[in-house]
Amino acid sequence: MKATPRVRKIALLGKFTYPELRLSSIHDPIKRDFYTTMAIQERWSTQTLDERIGAVMFERTAIAKKPDDAIVSELSELRASGQFNQELVLKDPYILDFLELNDRYLEKDLEDAILRDIEQFLLELGSGFTFIAIQKRIQIDNDDFYIDLLFYNRKLKRLVAIDLKLEKFKHSHKSQMELYLSWLNKYEVEEDENPPLGIILCTSKK
Image (cartoon, rainbow, N blue to C red):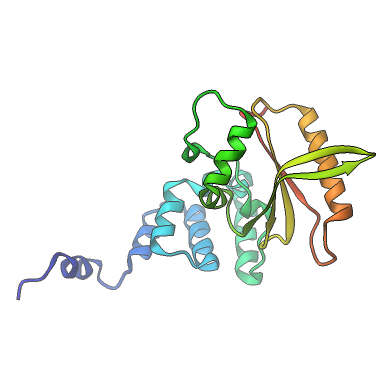
C-alpha cells in the first residue's frame, strides 16, 4: 500500500512531534528556553508557537533586554511558580501594522482601528490582557482627563493604561501617565491587585 504524503511526513518525524522539531531548530538556548517555557505555561497550539516565533516575540519582550543569567533565572521562576512578571508580558516595540492605517491619521483614527480589530490588538499586547474601556474619564482637581485605553492583565493582576501618541516620546508624556496611574491606584485598584502599569505607544523613543 502506497503511503500518503501525511503518512510519509509522520514517518520522517520519527519520535519527535512538530513543536519539538520547531523548538530544536532555535539554536540560541536561552531563546529556545523562552519559547519552550511560554508554550507550556500558555498551552500554545503548534500554530500559535509558529506565529510567536515568526513575530520574533522573544526579541520584542522586555525580558530580552536583560543579561542572560537574569533571563534564565526569571524563566526558572516562572516554571516553578507559574507567576508572570511584567518583563515576560510587555513588549518593546509593539507592531501595529495589522491595523492597515494610511500614512496620515489622527489619534481618533488609531483608536477606532484598534477597536475594529481588538482581538488582534490583544494578541499583540501579549498574555492575559482584557479590554476594559476606551477614553476612560477621570477627574483630578475638578479637571477632566481621559485615558485612551484601559486594560486588565490577569497574569500580572493589575490594570494597564495605554496612552496613544502620534509623535516622538516626550517627558511630558511620562508625567501625564504617572498622573493617570496615581488616580487609578487610588480609586480603581482592588485590594488583591498589584499597582497599575502604563504603556505609552508613540512613534519613537529616545
